[in-house]
Length: 304
Image (tube, rainbow, N blue to C red; front, side, top):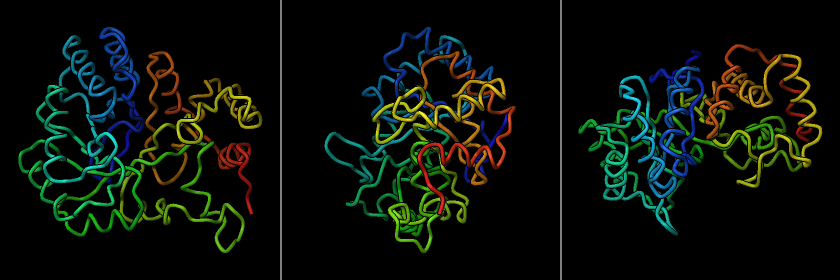
């Protein structure tokens, strides 16, 4: 198993399985998916209270029980803070959200609890109180955020007694916003626009692990780029490299993300056990600097 230390503290598998879509599966299918993950070197599972309206967490817990998988063999991350039509980082909602997730997951604690997207109305002191309450009660060991920029993280961290160890950001060869501006410093082309406040460099400086969600999607849930006619050059580059290394295109994409020195943790959300197993071949291959740049430019990105 290839591992990563999230935030320099929590050592887990370098790949996480995103559980957003498992709520629609049968318990036996979920059990097989989890077993395949563990057998293939993936022991970190990413959830959120809104995934499937809570069904993802419920189904996951049922499958874990069916297979008698010890809690200490897996790492569970879940997120809270989204309500229908709004975000809510109030102390009451944060504590309630995690309590309900733990009930559905049938566990006493989450290894990591994340704030799900930013809430512009949040009071950092209130979030700090919620985190402190959950931490002291043993309900969450570590904490993080998702889709937040450096200023938002710094504002929150100022009031926390615990360290933010993770930030979930969308990243793939077809969604490269967190690195594009870094290539185009002192330029006036569209790619030079810094949309995220230098979040990649900030996370590296602060030892915050970036978790790459939806690594096979382009846009905001617009579709999968693998096999898409919208990305002919990208698919050609990935397919040729997959053939040369005798792995699947999915493994190449995961390896491309793992190749970045920021030590990014990919979170593929597949529901197919065989596809997940094929992705973990990324553990055993290396992507060269030239191969990495070939994929980046094949996606339509231009270097200055």
